[in-house]
Image (cartoon, rainbow, N blue to C red; front, side):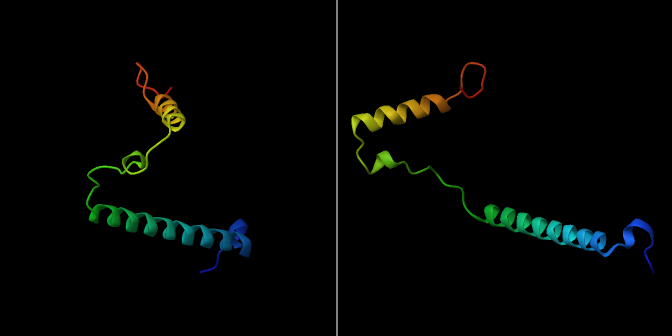
Length: 79
């Protein structure tokens, strides 16, 4: 089977081949990651630095400011 017209250019065929290969790799990687994440048990809780490292008052203040910026406001959006 011969391809004629605008798709007969080797650069176009190479582009389609590279796109097909990249899509295949992307799908395979995504499916592997999904399978791997389902196999793991979920973490019961997240470790926090304050649990093992005492913070200075300045660090506690800075941490509180960051947390307050990341908290949700009354409309449910980040501040």
